[in-house]
Image (cartoon, rainbow, N blue to C red; front, side):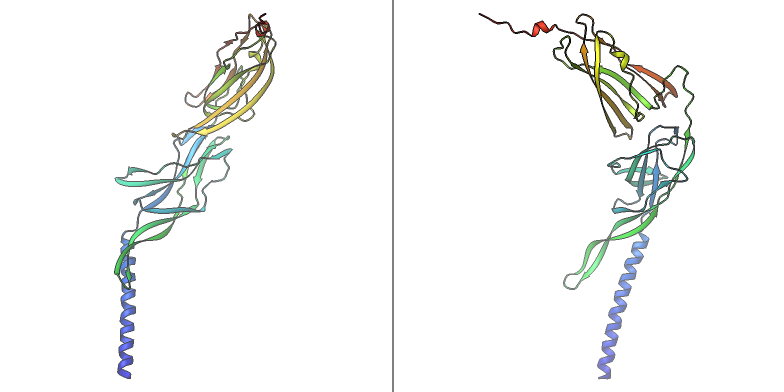
Amino acid sequence: MVSIRSNIVFLLTLLISSSVGFARNQGSAADANTPELRIVCEMPEREFYEGQPVPVIVTLMSSTPDVAFAKPISLPHLFGSEFSTSQVISPAGNAYEKSEGGKKWFCFPLRANMVTIDNKGKYEYGGGSFMVGVNYPAVVRDPFWGPMRTMRTEEFEIPVQKVKFKVKSLPAPPGNLQYSGSVGSFEIKTVVPEGDIFVGEEATAYIILSGTGMIAESTLPEYRDAFKTGVSLKSVTESRDEGHDNNGRMLSEIKLECTFIPTDRDNAEIGEARFDFFNPSTGKYETIKSKPVKIKVKSTASKRSVMSI
């Protein structure tokens, strides 16, 4: 009986030792293949103007493409201050590859925001961390099939690196300029839909302001002086739209639906609409104007049906 027990103890000890040895070997292999992981905050510009919209993209850089997930533990933030506006860009962007420091990196945008700051100064953004899962090839021992290849996921907590940037003050606007508070590059036009327009009856025109950048809240183009030649403005309905293009630029649009009544059949015109803004590309204030649009007005007599006897 003593001999049998000794053999059983020996076999169990050998089995446990083998299992532990196998697990340690697997751990050593994983340590040797641990990927390089870092999370950075990318900004296309590190110096920009007050009120200028700029994207901030939190990006995971990995030496391996085998990233399973990245979950926020705590989000990055602006140190010692707050953004004046912050809009989520969704999706944050597509995965891509790049070379840096003589290495190939697989880059995964995790989150992106279009932000503005209204006060000049030096700022720092970042902090927080993400739990990143990376897939590894692994070998398991099946009791029937023996060693089998599979995948296992290891998790790593990766801090978000900080980025520093500077916000510049806007230059003083000229004394004769009615600055709107908008920063970007814009254009303005007047559109009159096709169709018959009759004197004394309601018609519609659209004044459209659009471009890259941010149109200040509660700001409209100056349109009232445009309805003074042979037309009378009755009402205006405003609609706004914002988005982002593939280059990370903010797109803004204001559409004014103007209901007007032609008062002169021979001389009806929608004149210039005007808008003032600061263009960060030129570093100057600019004024844009829409082109005047002549209105072809018909007499209401032309609407009468001709009766045949």
